[in-house]
Length: 298
Ligand SMILES: C[C@@](CO)(OP(=O)(O)O)[C@H](O)COP(=O)(O)OP(=O)(O)OC[C@H]1O[C@@H](n2ccc(N)nc2=O)[C@H](O)[C@@H]1O
Ligand SMILES: Nc1ncnc2c1ncn2[C@@H]1O[C@H](COP(=O)(O)OP(=O)(O)O)[C@@H](O)[C@H]1O
Image (cartoon, rainbow, N blue to C red; front, side, top):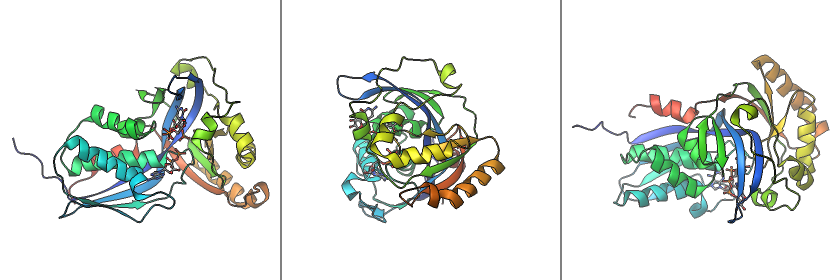
């Protein structure tokens, strides 16, 4: 049977995610927390370009600010695939066009890792399959599997048990309040709510809360200010462990109006003076998977 010729170059999106709600049910023996969450993608994110090389080197351009080469989730994902393949593979130059704020609760690093796994699986013609790729992803971070699988999902466990979630797909106005919170600091906080009873997805789809909000407000009051500001316009929430907050709108025009109002007002509302505000549409199929379907050989 003849195989399709694999492309030598691929350019693909690495979308952001939002947690439309996030409950913490308890703490496991290994210290990780059992969650229930609704993941949804945004049609906004980073972009990665992959070009096969004539040698065996792995290159990443430009360097990611504040992240060492060997710690970069893009590099770790490429190495995990090389290891799984168990045979020598051509090198690759990876270009990362970073737009998502790091540590913002938008899952940028995890999304970069997932895009790398799927792109190199195709370029290197490994055909490892979804289950293997999601399992490799989980070793890189709890949020990687949802980006690998590519459907909006009800996530349980640490977010690795995923079933498709029929979420509405509003427009969102997102604020990055110009501060950072560490995921570890939130999960390690003594006052974190850790005893929310388990619910069914159908109930979560009716609207929910983020159990990290109270602790995140304590750790970074600027995030609380951004939330309060957005709540003047609708049911705003925190994504993941922050720092980003978001508010859904049924129509694009209203989202644009709110975005512009916030851009105008943010100098007054913010204390950090560096809020970043953007608008994006929620999607239940990842832009990565849409692009992979349509990307032909370069
Ligand atoms: C909470 C979520 C929800 O989407 O959002 P983010 O705000 O980080 O995007 C994620 O599950 C985060 O996943 P991820 O960002 O990969 O977390 P990791 O780097 O694996 O974890 C950092 C640290 O947070 C703690 N941690 C993380 C996840 C979890 N379910 N329980 C935990 O206790 C652990 O102490 C861990 O060492
Ligand atoms: N390619 C990458 N992009 C972003 N962050 C990365 C990357 N590689 C490693 N990291 C590390 O992962 C951490 C979490 O990043 P990110 O996934 O963007 O945020 P969050 O988990 O809050 O949604 C960053 O603070 C950074 O140290």
